[in-house]
Length: 341
Image (cartoon, rainbow, N blue to C red; front, side, top):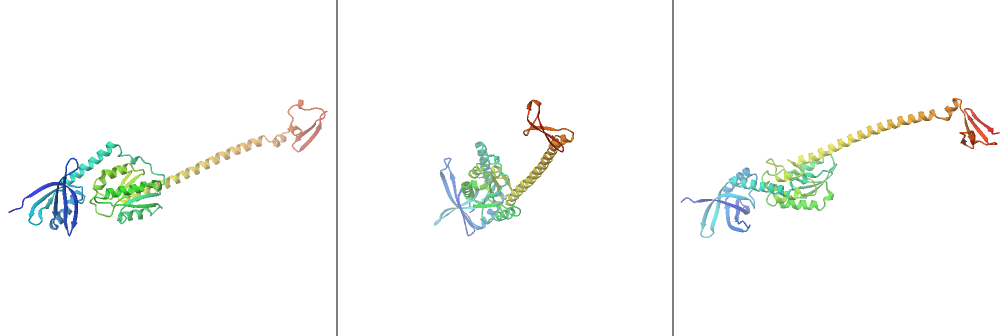
């Protein structure tokens, strides 16, 4: 007798793999969020070996707790082990649709709260030098980032390790962000990078709590998640979104080069301005020197004029003189003293 099969829509409450087999707890929740139904399901190795890569290729994600799935199951009963559900097929389109729905709900919620563009309103410091890095410590992308970043200029980087994929990734990244925020004065920017691993399991970067945290973060957030699919919600709220960790490094290098060129240009302008001001001041001094020379006593004496002084003061009128005063007359080649009669 052929075994009947059923298509079941459910949420994965827990999932584990052992010896190639996959064990899942499938649940249905009421509108209140309370558990309404629960089913223990198994996907045996011969089936799981085919369904797992098929699901990941179609959805871009691993099977994980909290995910909505549509699976075809066989219901079996064993006198000793009781009722069991064996998964024989899965419809990834259902999960893709649910992930897309959750993504759109996250975007709509962030837009409604008015936080989508908050992080983009930051202005990077003129020279970015101190960078907080959120990444898996062993990730190849982190090593590529550090190597690329230090190839031209010196930057100070501090790693805040986090899980970058899977069901715990969002909470782990948020915890790392909180650690950065606790010492935000020590950094100019924070980057979230992921690279060198599988391209699946990126739905965590559409998580509302993570995206909301980044949108309102007190430092500019730059992402380099290393994905090839559509931009994530995290990319949307970040100050700057780039495809790979090395692209993030190059961004900072380009910014430093731009500022270096700008400083060089300012120095050239300053030098030109200084040289022009020196020429202007020199010309004015030359004009003043000429004016002084034109009005100097020596020139006046050479023209036949003389200067009379009384007790060191210039005599401008005869009314200033009295009988008995000693008057000094200054000529080009000497002085003459006269007695006023």
